[in-house]
Image 1 (cartoon, rainbow, N blue to C red):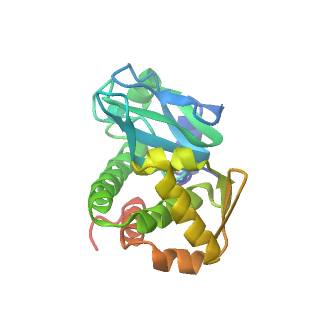
Image 2: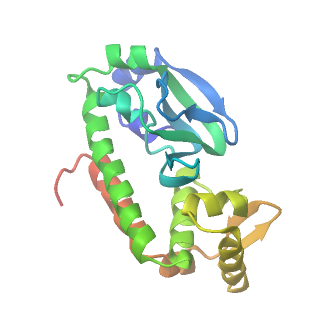
Length: 232
C-alpha cells in the first residue's frame, strides 16, 4: 500500500520527493501537530488514519476530518501558514512518509507536480469538512456512525480495525452511551461485529445503505479531484 498522492507522481518525481522523506511509524493517539504550535513536519500516510480535530476553549475536541493513504496532513504549510488552531493525531496506527516543513517549502514549489496535486487535494479535504459540518447538524447518530466506519475502512483498506467506543464518541461529538446503543443496534442487525475494541464491518452493502448520502458525496469528490478532473 502506498500513499495515493505520492503514487500519482511520475517515477522520476516520486524518487525526487521521497529522497527528502523518511518512513515513520504512527502509534495510536500519537500527536502529529498541536493546537497553535509550529507544524514541523508534513505527513503522507501509507497505512492508518489521522484525525483532524477542532479544539474548544474548555479543552473538548470534535473531529472535523480524517486523512488516510489518500491524503496529506500539514496543509497549512502548503497554504503559507506555520500553525493552526487545531490538533492532529493518529487514530488508527500505521506508518507515513514524513517530510520536514522546511524541506517541503523548498522542494514542493508552485511549479512542481505534487504542488498541483495538493491544490486539488486541498479542495477535496475542504469538501469533506464542509460536508461533515452539514452531516453533524442534519443526520442521525446512526447515519454518522456508519459514515465514519465506511470512511475509516476505505482509508485503512480493510474491514477490521481497532476502535474504542469512548474514542468514537469523542470523534462524533456525542456521549458514549449513544455510541454504545448505536453499535448494539448495528451489531444485532448483522452489519458490524464489535469485540474487545476491534471493529469489523460484516455487511458493507447494508452499512452503506444505512449511512447518509455524505459518505458517497465525499468519496466521489475525492476520486474526481485526485484523478485530475476539475469539473463533473
